[in-house]
Length: 170
Image 1 (cartoon, rainbow, N blue to C red):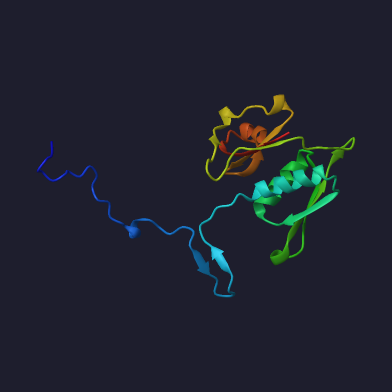
Image 2 (cartoon, one colour):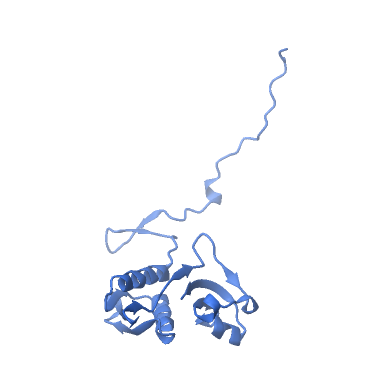
């Protein structure tokens, strides 16, 4: 019926060990101003660029201005080189530098039909050059981040370089 023995612990007591876990996204004060800066958060900037381009194209805009970053500029240059965008230009000096993009239309329809983001902060997707495949039976394009910089999967396959698959566009 009843046991006179003390109940056994099924689980060991887990102690709090705060020194083992770094504080990744704690706010840190900037010494020059009173703004709070988050440290350690990762953002994918090129997804914001692609979303803005796609939305501007749906709204039939002629041009678009986005804040400058090296990654965004490299992505925009590749898209312009492969005729998804008309022109791409850097404007202004560094603190307020922007990327000015002119969108491309064919017969009143935008050059970009769809975008598929492959690598996300929660799941990075890597592939070797032999694993690259055609996008939309060769009518699309995939962008890869390699050790030699950003390039299309076709260029990476020719150079025999693998890397992180960023996105597909068609």
